[in-house]
Image 1 (tube, helix red, strand yellow):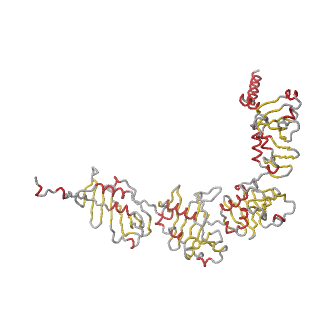
Image 2 (cartoon, one colour):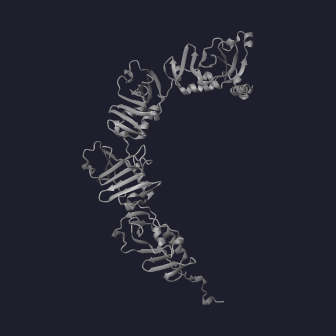
Image 3 (tube, helix red, strand yellow):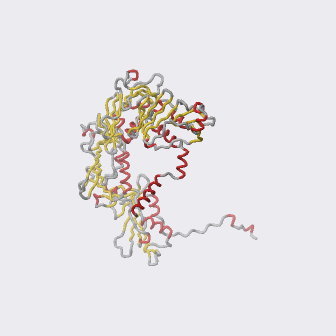
Length: 603
């Protein structure tokens, strides 16, 4: 009995859940029709002698009568939505109509011209549309085999009282650009094949080359977003009048697994509509006109679609950058989490910002010219023995199912001879010779010292205990136990403000950039400033900063004993380090002439 009781309760619960709420039930009683739009599979509109039939297959609507073509899905969706929300504004009962036999004729519902029939599970009866009512925006309707009539809005009549061609889809294809994985082009200059591999496009005919992803997508979008201007004819008749009897130019779009593709054939220009051109779209079997702008496809050449970027660098897998300049050694930069190290210099910290700048520069660098499609004479361009070679690699510390442990190069760029404002370059896995800006070479440091991090000293100001300053004279100061500074060499009152500014700059000193190995031109033989300091009373390892000659861009050459090489120091930092440490008393101002009392005016 308990089980039966539970079963009854479950049934009642299920039954109640299936019942509409009070508000929903009220709304449904006011609807002209109630149906489930997802179960509607067909629509027939009878408008006098003209019949329009549309059927849904695989969630796509097609016109079946009086012409077979793709139907406008958004227009049909709007019709079904309006039907769902179509409300009764009044009811004329069957009894009232029976009492006055002429009422159906009066309402135009006896033999109406316009009728709507839906197909599918739980479909409503056929709807008959009569005359407009005296109330503005209202009309009379009834169902087939029913004497009862309703007063309702005219929205549905406006949705269906159309010519057959108005239900045709003016969007050429239902493909979207992202679905296309291959493109075949036939133009007056030849044939081209484009293939998508992963996230990028490639030209596979008439040559194999990287393609410009944006340009390919733009080309595809011209077709996938094209709007039909005119419905001209089906493609079973004579196509000569439209310039389509022979394939002068065509584009075929393929999706994954589609071997036939969607063929768009381009034809001539109509005599009256010079801003349009005839096209034949094979999947729909019709001749249409499209805006003449689609003709730009005819002028497409392989070089127009080539990727002009020098190299593709996938930063998601980039772990190593190797800079190899014969005679200057090899520099290996390695990624460590979000930062970089100089792996070829005992994994010393690298200037990560400079590494990222190099990566961004190379990713955005575009070739100035495609020189040769077949690199048959590398010595001509200095690429048999390149002056510089960059290798980009991923790195795995141990074997996995996908990769082996170690470095896996994925792109190598070689730079050859410089000619005028260009330098010749070549990717190792491509047969082409290209030219890029000569200035690019200046942005790739071949000296490993130039990749060092910019931080020279990393201390707190309070850690510095002793400072020795040598300019044209020598001064030494020491911090006492009470943090008060005193002279070890020097005299006079210490300028505490200048001293603190100097210590702030010194303790957290940064290079503006690295200059590379030290040379006589850096002026360290005759320095203008030498700063030596220690960070604790028993610190036997002192830290030394030497500042030499000026640079061409208004900075100063400097070196620190704890770092190899020379760096550029900003003018502001040098001024802070050279602040006078002896306080000079400000002389009393001379009395102004007006304040001097002359003998003649003495009281």
